[in-house]
Length: 115
Image (cartoon, rainbow, N blue to C red; front, top):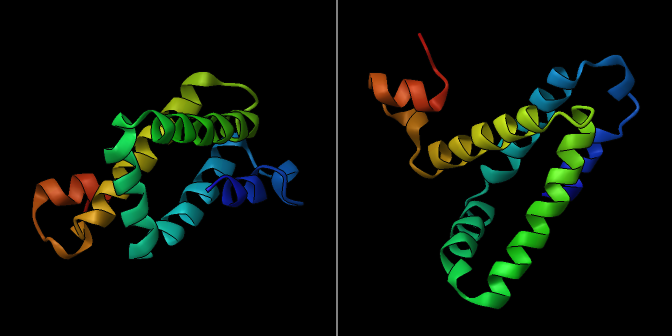
């Protein structure tokens, strides 16, 4: 995850994009990454196993690295970084539940489809 984020935080086009555009590009890249069921399953299992101290510490380190990268993308704006993580977590949940296959208003809201 951190490697994928890093590519968008410091790529050659970064200077030409606004922080919001950079976050959107990174969000799209992560969506492709978590579309792989193995990766998505691993993330879900890791979060469920966070009650184990060693797992919890490893997950905290991963998030700390990701937060540093995302905050760099938005020039240190903590609220923008928090919003990005929230949206990304909803994207992960939508992918886990295959919401793109559910034609219901609630699924459209969570899956980002508004038409």
